[in-house]
Amino acid sequence: MKKTVFLLFVIATLSLSCSKYGYVKLNYPTSPQAFLPENIHTIALVNRSLTKKDDNASVIESIVSGEIAGSDKKASDECLKGVYDRINGWRQMNIVIPKKTRLYGTGTRETPELLDWKTVKQICDSTKSDALLVLESFDSNSDILSNALNNTMNAVITGNVPPPPTSQVRMNVVCYWRLYDPINQKIIDQYQSTSFMTFDGGNSVIAIPPPEALPQTAYHAGEEYIQRFLPSYYHVSRSLYKRGKGRDKQQFLTAFRKTEVANWEGAQQVWEPITKSNNSTNAGRACLNMAVAYEVLGKSDQALIWAKKAYEDYGNKLARDYQNQLKYRIRMEY
Image (cartoon, rainbow, N blue to C red; front, side, top):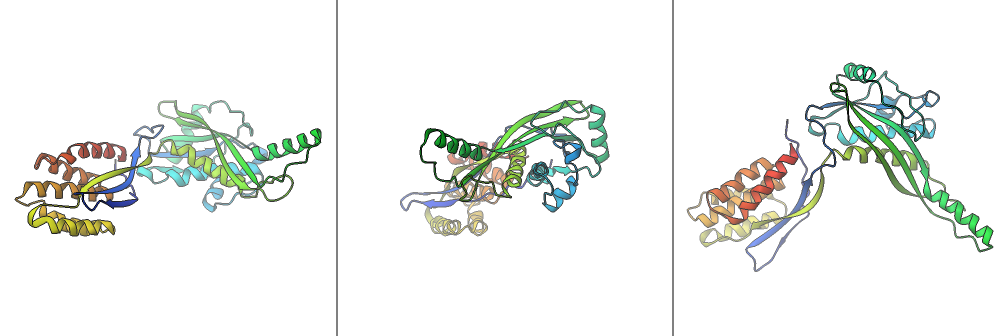
């Protein structure tokens, strides 16, 4: 499988004037909550949360145009758009929206029965898909609106002064998803998610969700669901050498100044000749720095080559643990 190109956002390069080390912080991937089988490359995406009376607009048109027309139920199409935008193209993943296929469900939060496998296979065959992802049910409401009503009613009953108008509305969307495998006739994943977003409800006595509240929350719900199959990130710190010994001392300082202004390619041009130095300490440090630079640039395979060289050829201690960290990263990126 083709290697995914991850964008590494360098947070900062820090230095201590009396230390031989510098540090760079970058994003590091963690395992996803769920895994797609390796043979899944194309997924057909279907909205089953509607009933026939809700169906007066095309799903594919809604997703391509980004516009949701009709009743609130049409906001469920935004869930599909969130999935489509978030994962389409990731690791050669291709999301397909069947143009002429409509599935109908309960139209409520109640989860429909499983689709029959003949239908699943027909959809996947018609779209040349390896799996079928179905939004089985979709439901929404506003928690803050209900709370505001309750607070007002309690104030009337107790004779207290009504609370000031609520200006915030929390919209929530409940979705139920199933991912069908037509070849093995099994459910790869089934998951119910609840997504929340907060909006300004205005200054009326009862806060009213703005028009964009439901579509935006629905879109976010789609992103949240498919994110289960994608790695998340946390910040890590990488050490590199800003000082060398002997005649290479000034070159290390020059290269490090380049990293402080994010000129990593320029720093590599300074370090690379030092990797061939007769001074094994300097050569090992330069190899380690080359590895860090390649990781920052999103080239983990090259980073591993240089980290292994730093440890195996020159015995650089930082590189011993670093190469293991890079091996883990590469597994996550494929």
